[in-house]
Length: 425
Image: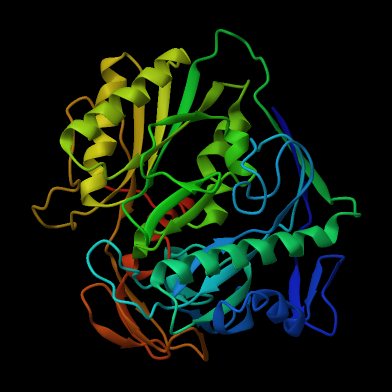
């Protein structure tokens, strides 16, 4: 599979009379966008807002972030399973408006209990909080959705997701007759057979609506670990739907997983990137967790992998799935390198990991999830100004916030992207 990704860097976003893209400037007609979003009358109202890096802006109630892509040619559509047939992505030519994202911001009117709970997602566009959230460094078009009183939570969630993907794709389609500024090629070419074979294992989340991940339009609820080509991820096959605060992983990240890009950059140099395994965490019981872990190891063995690098989305329960997978890989003589955040506080006797297996001897720590942050007041809030953080405590989003880094949007991945590491104390 050969994927050509044509990049059109967005350098500024402004409101204007027409929606156009030219020389890095994206001009948006908000009325036109609103008409598109309200076409099927699934919202009480929709509004559009621009948030740029460095702005004194705090965005709240963030669900997803989508980097606009449009399929020019190839086997699939953009975001197959949602915007077209569930045909295999990852080949042909795709255009991308790089450096920007379309963000969905909303709330839910229906009852939320237990797992099916949407937790707050905060993005600060300036200040100390920027390093603890994703999308503080992207140019953002924020779509604020007001739900219909008659819509269930699931109906509203599905409608928000579809409109966010549609508008993202439509914006990228503005480039369909243009030549990209840069084209990146992704292909698992044949390399020196003596190089170590490395597989990437990506554990994502699925529990129920509000905590789910989609592949080709279908949630991963009843899925087994799946061998996929990394190009499928880059080309929009996986869409995020996990709204658990720091554990949120936006579609933007699924399409730009740092480990995929890193492994590609080293393919044929000091390793042989042989493929990717997508698995889900939070299996319902120990037996299913062990089955899943063994299945991942089996797929890696079929690929004749010498090593595996693993990423993680989730919390306490999913930690068990993750470490059992590390154990199963090691027991099949595949060196496993897990990347994980810590939960123990420096200076205490708290154990830094929720769960652990003795076979895990090559752990990469990306720092502590739960550090305190003093975030200053912002001039503008996009989203709800009264927010409720984990534990039910109410805050004024416009004012000074004394919160933990885990209250920010997608903190778990932000720690990794922004270079946090664990240190000995």
